[in-house]
Length: 379
Image (tube, rainbow, N blue to C red):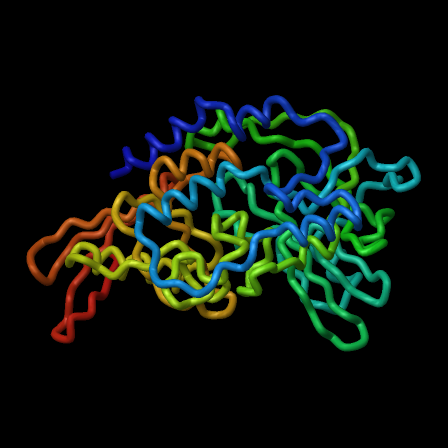
């Protein structure tokens, strides 16, 4: 089953897309883009876009696999919605000394919790803030291409919000600490960035010193409007930025129609029930991954997308894709190592499960108890 993941990954590496964009970085400035009528460049145009926006999809039952597939492919074909713009860093904001970006120093600047993957922290406009790397919308890998988020805390009330920026490290920028740049100004999050684009063609799933990146030495300023970062048009608990990364419908609170709103769904593209013992074992393995590991897990599967149930606060998500969907996903977001869960039945109540992450592989034994519940034990 390792071949499935390798074929999907190697096929994408040779067909341009994100890998090509890494070798040919975009010219500056990078503008704002959005699907169809939701392109926004000014206040008047924002209001016009909202007036022309499609209505929120009413409640519906589970979607068929074909309907889910068509929706995913269509959304991957939409122009990406960018909540952030990129421009040259003004000379007045250039760093004089490059230091103070270790986690201990960053934690000393604020009283809020600062993750280990913090990039920068600041106190500004009555708020504390931290920008950090996260696996919530970008699966973990040995490359380190995690997504960026901002956490803001009101210094008076203590209220916090945590928002995805829709940006991923090394694709093609990395965000860096610069105390000269106000973290929040004019209703936008600001942070310095440098071009360090991962060349996907250099990723061969061997020691990482073989990978290469494109750099140009120019300093950039990333600005992300808080209004855009917060937008949740269907009020399902996922911002529109997050919906884009999870391939859900930003206008449908329950994309797959399983009765759980997208923001509370472990697998918001899965609504089917197991149709066989092998399906039930696969479901048990996927749920164990979601229960034991945080972040986003991209799983490739040819069968129906199964309903993994409701998500606990802060829990993992599982994005189940067909191979053609995975190829389109990687053309947009870069080469990723998908998880492949292979089930081999060993009788009526036993099975062997192989979990292949390309970077690593594990084998588990599955057994069904008298009540019909499958449990898994690592070998």
